[in-house]
Length: 549
Ligand SMILES: [Zn+2]
Image (tube, rainbow, N blue to C red):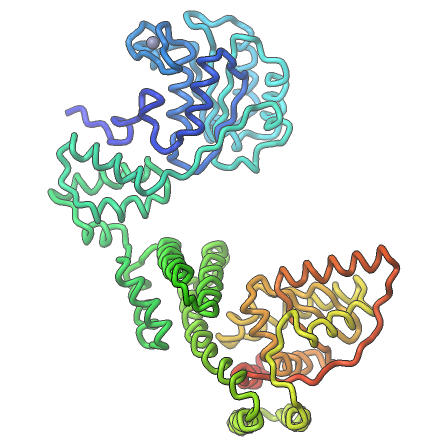
């Protein structure tokens, strides 16, 4: 039996067969129709999106004897003999990446094509060429003979030297949409009499992440082992999790159902579910919820922001996957962290609403704090409790109970005061200390809490912390005094800290540049009184003191 894998059997043979790359295909067809063929192209895009297939169709079309509207006829001598055509060279740079192979091409390039109009060199995975091979290629690309067309294909365009890129016409291949992948699989399944339901196809497309080749390979494999392919079969064999379960865990976060979140993580871990796929599914589900909020005329902007931040934090986990010791634990922390944040929303609103009775809330917070301090038995907590006494005094006098935000008066003044004496040497030291401080704070919550923060400005008295995620800046500022104390514990020096979001920091820097241009100097300003709205982290920092030391 001559069995051919599906993706080979259904490899597109005309431009109109190529799925999901309409714009790129139009450009190529136009260049053929108008006889404006470049001598070097670079096709870039994720794997399995049709780069090599398109390169071959292009090579066939420009040599076709009866081409019409840019398409190859697939009937003429050249089209029929395309696979044996000695004027078409396909080189896989992943396995032939040396300068010798490229030299061979160059030698051969001067000779006219044997039976075609163009000699076509398709170099797959071109980013894998060695640098001497790139240099050799470059010489050829500078002045190629008129009968030669190069098509370079790569998944990693940033690894291709700019000198090579500048000599090529660049065409981008995008991830193929789930719908296009599903439609194509449906067509093929019907022809191949594969019994598969739509939900199963959706899951396969989702997993393939824009790559048709991967999708067809999965379909191929599953069809060999199952007479009927259901969603459940796909989920089980790919180690995936259903959208319902994803939605359930997000509901659990919203409803502060810690057990459910923990169960979810241990389930996906036990079932070796692909980590990145879970993250992607979570992000998509969050995205859907966020869209629903935006569509609602009485939209809950706070909830929207929380969802947005949660999605960003989860996507940063994908990015850090390879350097993460326990990605599942981190995902769990992010989800648990948002349980806090969703609840915090409510307490923050009470804080603002009950402004006139703010004293009462402060006292409660202080009681909690004392409980926490009493729970710790560390020998040097006295120093901390002293600081707490001071802060309690300050708090009792304090009239303002607005939470600290990165555009607030306190923030502006702290950034201003930091600019007064800031320099690069302070900054270098501060960055190093901060990095260690964040790493050493081993307790679960503060890692999730302080991750993705850096010091961007430092003087001998003040540091400015920049947080990649807006909610982190808010969170740090809510707990600024606790963090200052913990840092003081660690380095025996007190700094005034403030956290800013990326956007706020850019604004501060812009202002700094303007001031510099106009020769306006920064001068120290007196700070307004501040109040911590949350005490949770103090507890954690106090408890982790020994580890920090
Ligand atoms: Zn033809």
